[in-house]
Structure formats: structure tokens, C-alpha cells
Length: 282
Image (cartoon, rainbow, N blue to C red):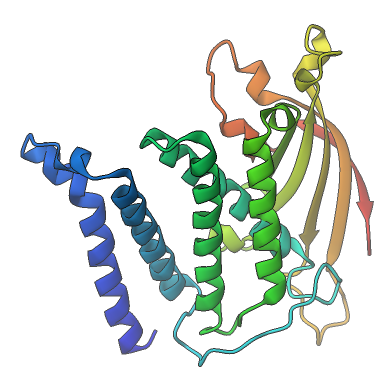
């Protein structure tokens, strides 16, 4: 990492810790000064903190600052793309999940439901676009394909919050399998060799099944790519493989509902809790 990048990381970390320390300082002084902030100022501070954290991570893990700004055409889900399209699914998922996280926090701070949804989506798109701008200063380059999937993820996020009846039936999730063999990445966000992205249709969301034992099951459709990490274009063996799968799985959130009522399993898929039928595209 260049000296200028190290300096930026130090400054960014200081700003980030300063922002995070606002409520802690108030607690130490027994004065909840942060509660006097308007919801608009809280939203600005949150976006500044997340943006700073993203840039810091990019400098540490994604080599931001190593190149002059440039565009890069990555294409879509073809076999000869850098990640077989798994990165596009990742952009869509994280844009979707961030829109919900931001919306939830804005509602906690007093925003009405509709403004919270819209602001959450704008914040998510802003952070994801910031990542793309940072990528333009690295070997990755600014990818309009990635940005398009950022927009698509935010649109899905808006629909799922705006229309609860849809969210009751459908989840958009990510799976990360830590037990899969192979070389690990320090950056789990781009460790596509262990990720799957999927849509789950929850039987519990349909009135026909909600009072039957089928409410504990779901149908899944997912996508993943494997073999891209170790692929060497100069070698004879091409290990790259793109896979679509359909499967029947357990609705873990519903099963655990009597003991732990949480929405985390609406976003996270637990590995080895479904039976897939894999359709290899290569």
C-alpha cells in the first residue's frame, strides 16, 4: 500500500471512530447529547460513518489508490467473466440487504415508513456506488454492470419493504459455507467460492400451507460459481463451473420461531439445510 493510502486509512479510521464514539461520550458524561440530534443529522452521520468504513476496507483489502480512475467492462454471467457472475449476484444481494438495514434504522429514529424506505434505498445505492467509484482507482475498475446490479438490488429491497405481503412469501438470501475446502480469502465479501445467492419461496407465507406441516418447508432457486479462484488460463484443466440449483429446504426461521424470533434467517441461508438439484451450465 502506498504511503498516501496509509495516511488516508489513518485519517479515515480516526473519523470513523470519532463518529462511533458520539453516543459513548454521551453515556460517559451521563448526558444523552446524541438524543438531541435531529433524525436528519443522525442519518448524515450514519452515512458518513458507513462510507468511511467502506473506503477504509477498500484501501486495506481492495487496493484502492493503486491506479488512476478507469472503467472496466466485466460482462455478465458468462463462463469467461472474472467470477462467473457470482460477483453480480453479490452486488445485487448486498444492495438489497443494505437498503433494509438503513430503512430499519431510519424508522427507529422517527422517520415515517415511506420516507424511511426511500431514504434506505438511496443510502444503499450511495454506498454501493461509492464502492464502484473506489474500484475505479484499483485494478477492478468502475463496472457499469456492477452498478446496474446495485440498482436492481435496491429495487428488490424497495419492493420487499413496500409490499410486506411479498416479503412474507419470498426471501433473498446469501449462503456462506466456511467448511468448503480450498484457499480462504481474508475478505469474506468477495469469497465467492463459498457463497451462494438464492431466492426462497416460504410455504408459511401462503395461506394454503400456513396451518399445515408444510409451513416448515420452502422451495429454493439459487446460483453460484466455483473454480474461478484457482483457475489458470495457461493450464490444461478448466475447473470453472457455473451452477443453478432448485431445491427443497427447511425454513429455519420458522422452525426456531418458538425459541428465537428473529429475521436474520430471512437474509442468511444456513448451509446443509436443503436438498438441491444442481444444473451445471458448463
